[in-house]
Image (cartoon, rainbow, N blue to C red; front, side, top):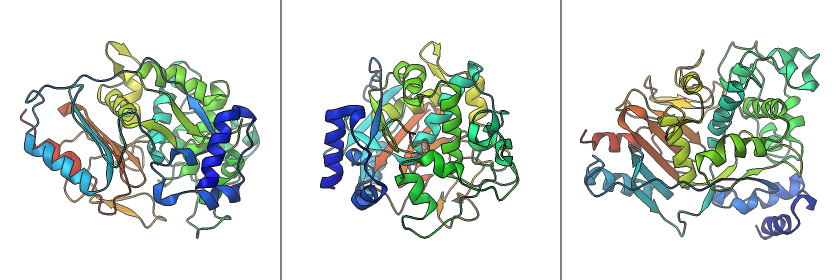
Length: 385
């Protein structure tokens, strides 16, 4: 950990001139037991500039229409499960905001795959500007695949995780595809080396490779600098604070499938944007039709849209793919039919429930007893109207 902190300090002092840690150094120093809070370990990093920070108003006592008992139960559940942050908002106002373990409103966290949904929102801006389209084949956007059969995979198939590209589970170690995609200093090359083992559009398989390639394609479409694009088109207008992207090397690729380091309050704003159908106050920041497209059931998995999960229909055990043994329970159906949720490994979550005006953020230590439906249903049961 000391070595990784040293890299972080060196990068802060020298900016783009700093050397990238090797894959072996990253693997040896990475704090797997503190992967959510140890943002200094994700180096090198590129800043995503925020704008004028937007802080949601607070609901006065008794004005949110959520019972005190429900709020107390949700807080106790979060605390018991090792949460660092819990925020609950109703109709655009914060009802509850709590932090534990020394963290606070200004703390940034690494929330794993939650970045995938931000990537999809950024796509909405690019599609609106006709820079890219869901039907575009990768051959049009990735020069390496211009004459490759894999270039026939479409952008929409990447976003829905139906590319047919192989990413089989493998034992841990420096040779594993998952390790190389996370720790290598050229993750674009790692993603481009993945073979195809099923026809595009023939199966659902949640895969970091699909998100990585979707990000590489978007970056090419918008001029090459995703962090700058994300800041200008989404992050700064949203009112989020400065965030950062985990890079494979200085001047290289961001990890598009994970590792956008941001505050819990920033994730609340992302959830609110989803809840409001892409609106920010009176401004339509992301097209409403894109939000509808992104959150609609995908072709092969009704519980997945485009880089976002859906609570309906009820999936008692949510699977990521046929080849991934891990499942996430939802013991009971969600008590609203329109629950959307952003999923990060270890029970990092943002729930957006438009019909009930609710947005809920939970960030913290991995919770082995996590049930997807429990936290939102506690609040949904506590609604007075």
